[in-house]
Image (cartoon, rainbow, N blue to C red; front, side, top):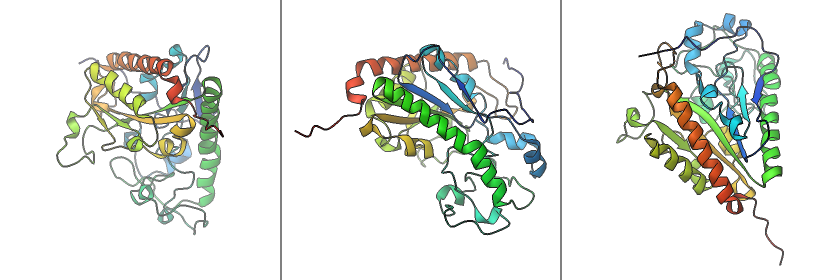
Length: 307
């Protein structure tokens, strides 16, 4: 089976925590975001970690930004987080922190009791995807706040700007939050088999996105031969919950791609099927763009008349 070299790793600090692939002109009310495909590992973070770089990389959504990089050709921007989720996870609240990770009590405003914190996967994660502890010792709150100020806040400021730009131009916006998932060990129902799932669509049970959008994405990918499920085991994270507001014309949906479709999960090398998946995702995005044109009156903010 043909493979490609490993995805590149950057150990230097990038000039910006984000990158936006912009279209030549904004043609569709779509915004794509890839919050977990970053591979810039600050040297001080690697030095403080108890794990080797290869283990840290197991939490990456490798290549997801590349798989969706056709969005600008369609007329939509793609926002990429450049730091890895092991360093800081932008798909969380700003301050979801585990108090046991820190060398001093945390401020009262910090959320220390969320399910994500309990799982070790807060804004500053305690563990990687393999459930191994990341850090050798305790962290200072000041170091966490620097990451939040330097990485988290700029990412969400830019995401809000991209959503607002699309909403102002078209009267609504569809935010597609792009992720990947491991092929094994998923928390699926007892009667499900994670190996038979290619794509999981998360719309928080229909609360973050109009059903016609989820239907269109499922129909498009199913027609292309992919096995698609909804909201199991991933119903959507902070991004879909925070930004999804269908009544006001902002529709947010999460897409999880089974990594086994397009990469070797052990070596992190691309499989030969990578190019086909990328082309199929472009087809799906085109189908969503077509839906936007057909259903714009249903997807827009519905202003209530006072009469």
